[in-house]
Image 1 (cartoon, one colour):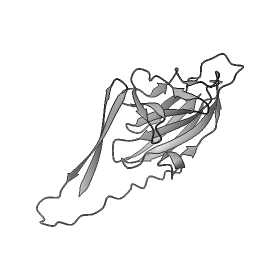
Image 2 (spheres, helix red, strand yellow; image 1 turned 135 degrees about the horizontal axis):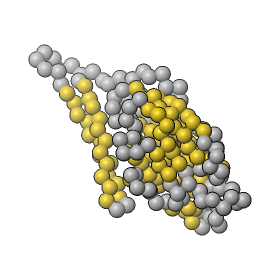
Image 3 (cartoon, helix red, strand yellow; image 1 turned 180 degrees about the horizontal axis):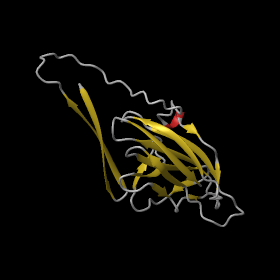
Image 4 (cartoon, helix red, strand yellow; image 1 turned 135 degrees about the vertical axis):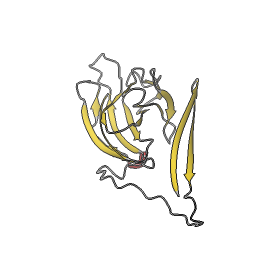
Length: 193
């Protein structure tokens, strides 16, 4: 039995509803009722296991200096593989610039969905998602913004603020990348704080 997963998201105000729909196609004419379990794709992803926030792949920490833009490459191994990456962003008091976490999909071999979440080290996390993105929360309830490569290739949250932290917007940043298709998708992303 072949199974296809479709992710649908609907946004209204600050509420996002995400539905996962599984569609199974049965083989015809054989009369057999055998069921084979889906197997994970073998795509040679060297960042695995990174399928959830607790086991996210750590990438280099960032400071508020936007010149620190490193690239990371990986592979999304089909619809059952969400890739998570994390870094700590440090707000530099000597820089008057605003903290603006950014995620850019530099290249990919197919469509990708991607999210950028923030958790302030002190205070309460406040952010507003830019146009072309939807508000979302990670598995621990931290706020973030999501989009996909059919709409745009980047998210730039220029409104991150740690309310009650005395102007220190240092945060843990979580990146989530996935594919809506059951194929191996090689990708490269860049990020800065």
